[in-house]
Length: 404
Image 1 (cartoon, rainbow, N blue to C red):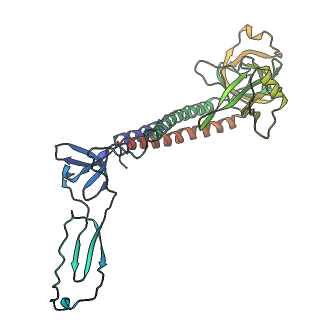
Image 2 (cartoon, helix red, strand yellow):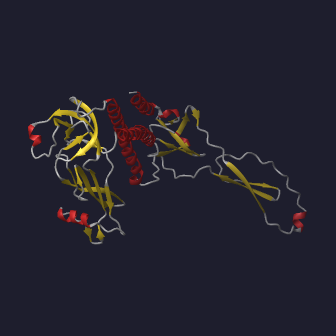
């Protein structure tokens, strides 16, 4: 609960942070007031960001009454005096008889004059003004568009996706954390001392039917597989599942040395690494067993330019392979015994998914399963919180609700 409170507190702080903390209020001669960040100022105008980069308005000095109660003061221009000597000429006789000119002092030059020439003796001083920002055409109340609308809105769309994914990852991490805490609280049991309700069992998988995994033909007690094809869409692409299957409706036995119990894997969460993976490529030849699988299922694997980009994954639990099961012990119905090769001593109890209860099947130990859940919870909670808060802050800035 503390983690949830901290997360929502961070979101609340971002929402209630006032944009006017760093914004300025510009009062206009027509009585209107505009709030925004002054991003550019020169002797004749100011440019104001009013909506986080989406719109910029230029106001000129004759339109402005004051800024935050202070009269509009243009920045002092940087003045560089460039002295251009006049061409020297031979003095004439008549010039030598003229009296020498009296030097006049140079007075302050008006700020509105862009260039002024001041003669001192026989030299000419030319005043060159260096603007502090690029001058813009006088177009009152016009937005400055620096990017096209599609490019401008693309980063906002990415930010929204990031925000949604971050919130999802955060709450998914919380669910995984709760699941981990629940697994830690369930006491380990044996088949002989089994009681109804949530139980944890460690033992060896026993086959009740002869099964073969579809991709590799491995004899097993349980299998699951997926076949994916890479589909391009413009400059991007994604993997799309074109075939999948499992044996969740075929139960298998679990023997821990004290007895054997039936496991019905339908509805279980399988925590197990892939036992077989294969991805096609330019230098890879598809194995015959995969070619046969694709042809038997009527799936296309070749195109005009060769084999498609395909990815195969298969998971299975072999006979006598160690298995960990956390689920609900229920009474087995008489129909579940049909066509099952059950050994003597099998209890009339089945481990299955209870109403709203956790149900996990893994070919790893309980310690490895808890470690896997810990990493998923840590990445989901902290990674989701950081991503969602960062994208939320960016969206508030882009819409002008939070000035940085």
